[in-house]
Length: 267
Picture 1 (cartoon, rainbow, N blue to C red):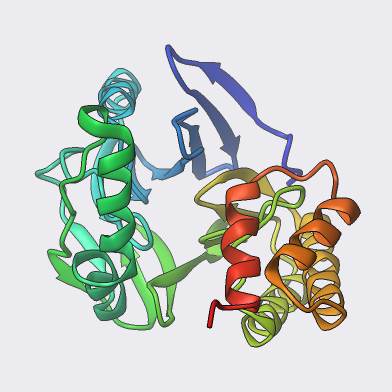
Picture 2: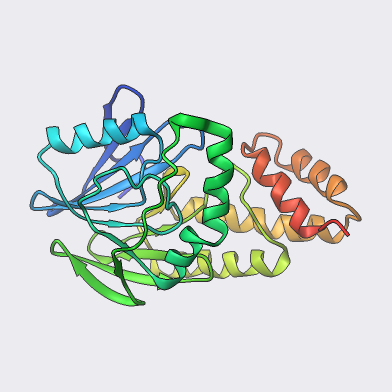
């Protein structure tokens, strides 16, 4: 399965890219919102499992209409890194790990929601989707689809063996990412090397269209470059300048600002 091997449905604001794996379909909703969110619906026999939530009210209405028009009945919402948007399908249960529930209700995720509320105002659904069902690491089955849950310090990643895909928070082969120093870069590199070893067809992330293993390798090279550049710099400003020079076409400069600040924290 190639990342562009899909059919595209243009919606009013966003677009839906549909990947057909036979018995299972993946509906990847590109929201085109202010923070480039992606929402994924895994569908089997007319039942769907949603991975992450749309967090702007117009996207909530658009995705709800799409599901109704296509007769997709949601059985669950897997809420990992994006807790905002609880207005979306409120009667469908939210699944989360202990770590994700804490992250989204009182941790870093809750802090981001507070910031986004100030930035985006009434257009943004800041209602937090607290977990109705706490799930543990390992395999679970929902709507006849198996998922493998892998929790971390923030939330959790998801493998979908039946379609040979994995979901994680961020990748983006040509955009900057939030990297909290050298040790964090090494953790991400190890994770991406694991994806390559397992041979996943697609890597799904919260802020980018589905990517493939060539993109994962590109990201590994980027992360190694961050480590090398940081070792030659004496300040966040110097690091930002050199990273921008090397990766001139990359988007996500706000993420780069966060990254260099964590490589060189203010004293």
